[in-house]
Image (cartoon, rainbow, N blue to C red):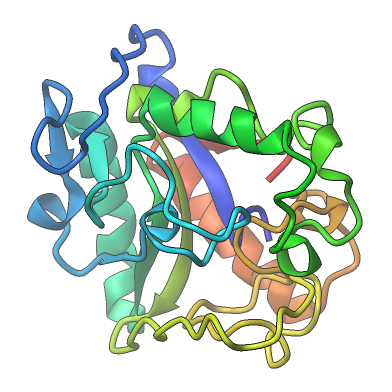
Amino acid sequence: MVKCVSSFLLFSLLSVQAMSAENHIDLHQPKDFVDITTVAPDVQVDMRYFSSHNFIGRPIKGYNAPVCLLTRPAANAVKQVADRLRPFGLTLKIYDCYRPQSAVNDFIAWAKDPSQNQMKNEFYPQVEKNRLFEEGYLAARSGHSRGSTLDLTIVPLDSKIPIYDPGRPLVNCTASAAQRSPDNSLDFGTGFDCFSPLSHPDNVILTAQQRANRLLLQTLMRDAGFTPLDTE
């Protein structure tokens, strides 16, 4: 689903120098970054790397609070999208925003350890973990560290984020929405952080509704100044 929608990078911030890595996103946020809920209170935040429901299966280093930090221009652009969705009873849900380098380093160390593959059946069932960087699903230098890249989806405005059940059997992220781990997202064809070609924006193996959902999000995000990443 393009990371259950997509990773989007704000056009206008591409030339901004990357922020220095931070180890704490709750108390020591980078200068000029804001909590998205202070700008767009309707937007839901489901910071997966603060939880154990992600491709590694545990909280990621550097994510010490379930807070979405973005640069002010990026946060304002997200608000524009949320404002356009609200009349239709919809809003955005964000899975990841600013990512400290310590988290990226955690990803790199994990990828080098073949013994850590407990989440493979859900997040990367058809890709060997030692190829995740080579195939572009992970990056040693993440655009998220600039605070202008985010992973997000569209959800009903009045919906609740499901509580993750770690005891639930893992289901392939490319399975149907009814079979996958519960999520309040509209159906984009795959789950969040689904390391599969089916997550790519140009995936044609989709239902008409899934294509419509992807097009809606991509159109709104582009209009606000973002561009989707071609591997998500």
